[in-house]
Image (cartoon, rainbow, N blue to C red):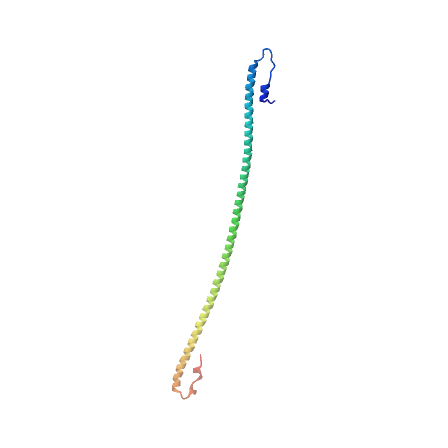
Length: 171
């Protein structure tokens, strides 16, 4: 049963012979009603305060959940960024390796072509030197024959029929 301050103050008791002093009873009831009123007020204040604190706790829990969700999302984004960066790095490395292989292959082809050209030039040089030597030898023989033939021609200018065809032939 709930009592209010007014219930306590308005409470009446029957008088009996040799009963309690009514002034003391009223004084006690008045004090009790004031104490009851104070306790009721404190209970209301504490209840309101508890409700406010429960509301704040709910709000803090919601914030905590939101922060945990944000932290979880940040971790996931971080993992995604790391994964994406690793994929990009792997792709960049693979492209660089492919380019390097192509460059090395092209360089090897260029070296091979240069070696072939160098070998052909060496062959052409050797052939040219050989042909030049032969040409010099041939011209030297012609010159020798010409000098000998001039000497013979000086002696036999009157008769050109004395020149033998072998002496004029190019060897």
